[in-house]
Image (cartoon, rainbow, N blue to C red; front, top):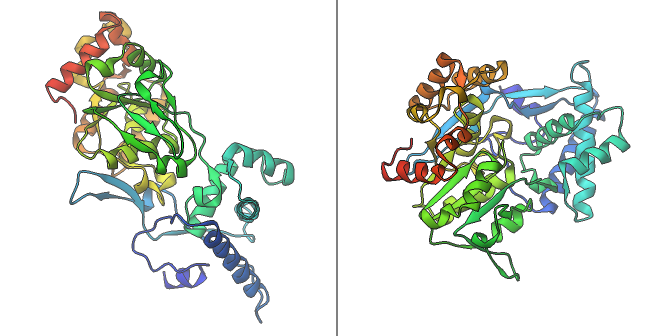
Length: 381
C-alpha cells in the first residue's frame, strides 16, 4: 500500500475517502499539480509515464457508515486503488480520456461556465472522436476525474441534469426571486433545478408532517392531481425513476431543514424499486466519494409483501432476468438491512413483481386511503 501512496498524484492519508466541494481556483490548482507531477516524472533521470491511481468504485471497496447519533447511514469508499495506465492495452484509452475530460473541465472553469454531462459528451465527441463514442464513457471518466482530484462533479463545472419535481405543502424561494407555492404547481409539480448551488441557497418553509418520495412520475401526478397533501399534510418528491443527483440533493437538504419529518418511500414491489429506495437512502457506489452528501433516512412505506393481499392475482407480473440480476447485486452488498432482505427474498421466491398502479383496482382514490392507513399504523420500515 505504501507504494501506491507514493505513486498517487495526491496525498492519500485520509481514512475515509470523499470528494471536496471546492471553488474553481482550487480545482484548477489540483489539475495543475496533476499535470506538473506527470511532467516531472516524464523529465526525471528515469523517465516514466505515471499511472493514474484512482479510488476504486467497486462493491468490494464500499462500506456502509452506520450513523451513531442519527439513523442516517451512507455508502463510502475506503482506500483501495485501481490504475489507469497508458502502457496497458485495456486501460490506455481510459487513461487518455481522464486527461481529455480534465482539460475540458479546466477550460469550463476558466470561462466560469457550467455544462451538463450531455453537453460535455457532444463537445468531447467533436474534439476527440477516437476516444469518446458514448455517453457512458464520458460519465465514467467524469467519475475517474472525481476519484483522482477528490473534488465533486459540481466543483468540476458539471451541472446535474434534473428530471425531478416537487409538489405539496412547500414554499420555495430562490435568491432575489418570488416565493413559489408548490401546492399550486399543478400535477406536474415544481421542476427541480440542476444547479446544486441554487438548491443549496433555497429558502424552504413548510407545515407538512411527511415527505413522500415517489418512484414513478405517473403516481406522483395522481397524488398531486388529487391534492393528497391536503388530506395528509405532506410534500411529494419524484425523480421519475432512478434518482438523479439534483433530486437527491434537494431531498437531503429537506432532511436537514426539517430533521423531524419522516421521509417515506413509495416504490414498486420489485428489485428495481428497492434499488431506487436504497439509492435515496444510502447513495450509490458509483458516486461513493460523494454519497454522504445525498443520503437521507428514507423509510419504506410500500409496496411491501404485506400489501400484496390488496392486489388482484391478475396484476402480478413475472420477474425478468434484469430483476433477478438487480436482486443478486442487492443481496451481495452490505447495505441491505434484514427486513429489506426479507422483502427481496419474498420477491425472488414468488417469481413475481407488483406495481403501485395495481392498487387502482380499488378505485383511483384508493391510493390516498392506502397511504393514510399505512401512516396511522406507522407501517413503514
